[in-house]
Length: 88
Image (cartoon, rainbow, N blue to C red; front, side, top):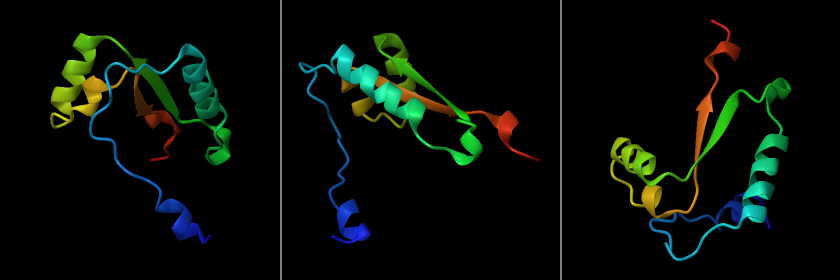
């Protein structure tokens, strides 16, 4: 397969099954993978927050153009960028 063919598997999930939850072990593996992901100069210029609180997810959904997947997922991962690593 070519590089572009390998990317064609992707799809956007519009709604999650609220009866299914990501297991603690799977979440740990996901977060470890994020932590180990290579970044420019090894700076890891981001923070990843795991949001499970329903009130916070509703507030985030409102700021996310009402996307239903924000509140239907079991764990919402929010990435924020560190601005202090960007040269001005």
